[in-house]
Image (cartoon, rainbow, N blue to C red):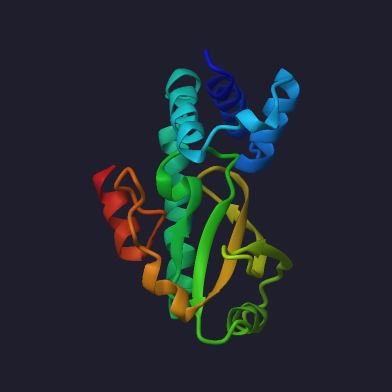
Length: 193
């Protein structure tokens, strides 16, 4: 096994079994294995390793957990419809487990509108910054929300993007998969499952 594939497999275990984010999981896996960071795998290799890890160790539980998270995402997308929400991350790509965060991207004309709407509804949240590519940072609203189907709480991350960012949002990657989808696309995934 090459160093890159070994790191990807170790990172997949950290992502699935411990709920780590991909970047930190790759770095920790490399450090734990004593492999130079230059050998870090790309996200496609890590995604393949995550899918393999799920198939081997979580095939009996992951489909129901993924469905519960997708249904919760659909509920929140409906609540936040005015901000053109798009689901992204592991829940969208089908690799989520109960430890995964739920990531929605909101495309807003006014970057503070989503915060104001949540405050007006009495919903509490924390604010963090996240990268939006091209050296740009944007606000991420972090909510702790109940997921009755899992009988536990889930972290919901709302990334606030400009309305203009929506133009390139649905382009497919090298594998022909999109990085995000709107409520209609999510409902299609739920219907197909």
